[in-house]
Image (cartoon, rainbow, N blue to C red; front, side):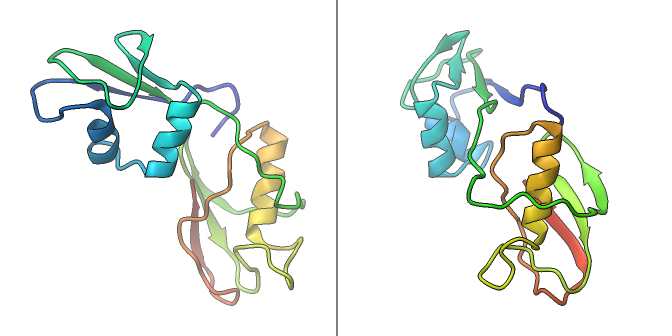
Length: 149
């Protein structure tokens, strides 16, 4: 998740399994309709080195790249300095050991002291402009690994 790294996915068409780019995004990369729309709107879908659209028909040996390098807004989460026990981190995922007694999401009772607030501080510190997306939701009193994408 280091700043400056470009996150790009690549797919080479081997056969006629998929008719268009949207099918590749959904079936090969399990992308949500919301993310596909974001890629389309930011012109981050590249077919054979040219920006293209999601309904573009495919041919064998076409090279599709999906550039996921765009900024996302986290202004809805207050940045709060806290110690994070990082278990694993790569360009797509951050896994934390969640201590008991801390909430995952900000709320009325935990506006500035949730794990997401600490992740926002960490993202700001490393210059990462990504949305905070907790993958699992644990109760405040549960201590386990927490996954963020």
